[in-house]
Each structure stands twice: as C-alpha cells, then as structure tokens.
Image (cartoon, rainbow, N blue to C red; front, side, top):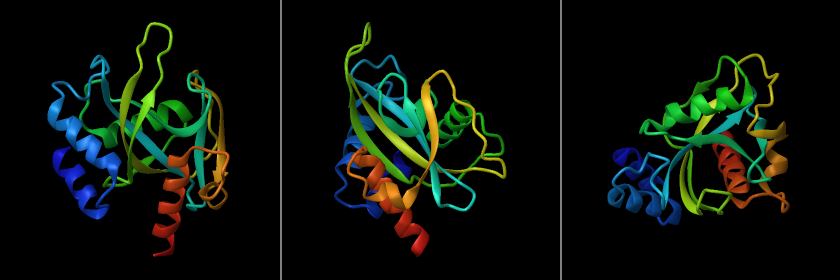
Length: 176
C-alpha cells in the first residue's frame, strides 16, 4: 500500500488527503483494522456503468448521505479487493471488475454514533466497472441506490464535495 499511495501522491502532488493517508499509514500500528479507534483505512468503489456515463451511488443508511459504495478493510490491506467486495455486496451486481491503480483518496470524519466514537476514515477509492447487467439490489446498508449521470454530478452543489471531485476526475479521464 505504501508504494501505491506514493505513486498516487506523485500523480497528484499537494493533495492533502493522500498526505494524510501516508502519514497515518506510517504512524498507525494496525491501520486496516476497524478497531483502531482514532481511524482506519476503508476501500471504496467508483462504480461506473459499462458505457462510463453513470456512477452507482448509495443513500447511506447510517450517514444519511448519497455516497459511493465502499466499506471497512477489516484487516485486509488489499484495498482494491475491499472496494470490489464492497461494491458487489452493496449492489448485488455480478461481473464487476476493478481497474488497477488508485482513482482517488479522501480522509473524512465519521461522527460519533451510539457506541462508536467519532473517528477518521482514510478512504482509498478504485474504479469498478459494471458488467452487462446493471440491475442492482439494495442492501441493508443503504436506503436506496441510484445510477447517476456523472456529468450532472460533477458540478452539483447539493452533493458531497468528494463526489464532485471524483466526477470531475472521471470526466477528465474519459476525455483523454
């Protein structure tokens, strides 16, 4: 993970999120374990449709926000595999594939909830592509799922800044 994050940092110099992830990776004893109280790594999927025009988002049950699919590493340092696993579990989609290399990183605060103290998520995101079938199933972790046009998401002011950032990154990538 060190080298992969360093490569991403070289491609996106000055990104405060990747710098925070690298620092955490160096300092934390068990950075991939959910039990690490101050924070831990998570893996997320920028799950795009076969034509690359839409992304599948979840209306997250606990956070009450529209977000990309993803979840806890639970000790697994292969965050690409985590992203793929979480995308499949949360969407019910079959035939998903993960593209090599980090697509985006984000460090964000998860507020205190019930018996869980507030903590940081060091989220490493990968492009996951849908197969031929795009009919999803809503899991218990979501209130809803929706395919959203990426072009609409790129400049929508009523959504999460990191989703807008990923949408803009994706549009640049698709135009190259």
